[in-house]
Image 1: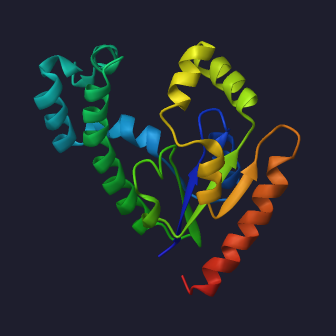
Image 2: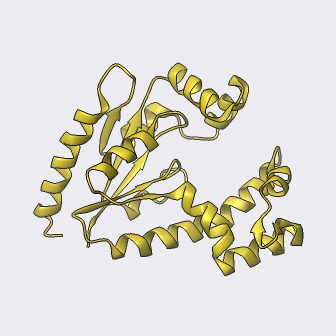
Length: 200
């Protein structure tokens, strides 16, 4: 079985960019966000749970009605936590099944909330992607068309960057000063070596 590597970082850290570099190197990457979106439509058990808690209007033409769900969870902490409590277990299950099928020396699961969701122990190693807060805010505003206040509100729901990076086994700095590709290449070699050492 491949080594299971978590890839995490706060909003705007650029972890998706780092994930793409690993993919170019031939490493399979599981995106928890993309999987969650897919499972909300495809996982029958999850669909039934969403309908049970959020009503039949949750789906339109057999697809999740995102604007409706957004209106339900927006500014409603309890409903947002409820939705997360339904989606996270389905994603964790799906990721574990996916990882078990891979044949490369290591695989990566990209997820923003590895520590927040308590799934760090399901990984052999965790890579953190770090960037200065002002840069992260700018990136997130540009990417999502969010206001500074909206980005800061989302950031406040995640573990503080400095704490998160200390919890990681490896850190890639994505501050637009240090080149990311050499850092990923060095880490790639290290993970291949670790994979051989564990006889995976």
